[in-house]
Length: 141
Image (cartoon, rainbow, N blue to C red; front, top):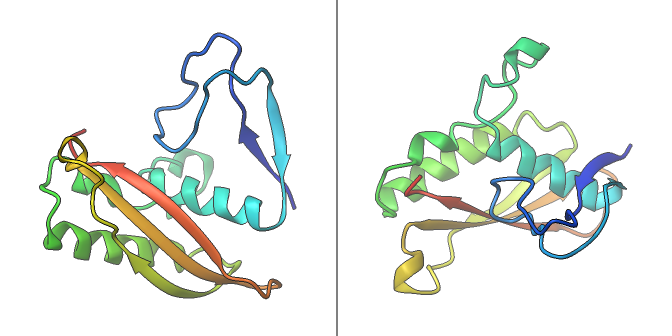
């Protein structure tokens, strides 16, 4: 099963507000993703979509509550809540066999203190290797 992946636009303008999607100088349209790339994209989409945002399309439980952390300080409390929200959201992803680890690398600089960096390691049904995925959440809004 393949999902659509955003590619970059020729006008050098961002096509998405998601920090991890680079839409720099690549010229193209949409491409298909399969295998672990597909699952990584599905996880990222689920985590960065507000829970309930897809309810009009019949997916009431799709998404996560990570948006509730926006405006909160980047603290141990925010990280604990983020882990809870991630685990809750990913338990609805049937392709994930096990969440191996969730951890929060420190911010690279003082300017990025409002950025909650998240690394998620999961085991996926049908794959031997583990999938390691990085997601960043801008807590400053």
